[in-house]
Length: 98
Image 1 (spheres, rainbow, N blue to C red):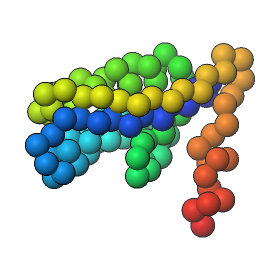
Image 2: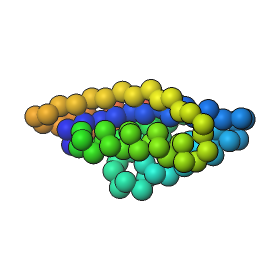
Image 3: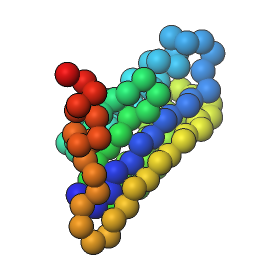
Image 4: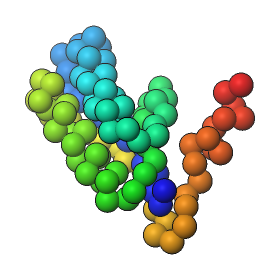
């Protein structure tokens, strides 16, 4: 695992319920990838291969639009280590969620 991405998808929506519905569709897509992920209150972290993660980040925008958002913004954080592994989600947060 040479990369970790945190993505916060911010679709334009007419109300909070619609916003949550669209974000839930994006999260469902992330879950469907089979990669290890962690959903937090502001963003979702995903671990895997750098190129695969970049494709997932791109598809998250398309998912939000297909779900009905007229536009979507996203905040993305990327950790990439071409040689070796990056710190895992488990190493970063497990001690805080016991």
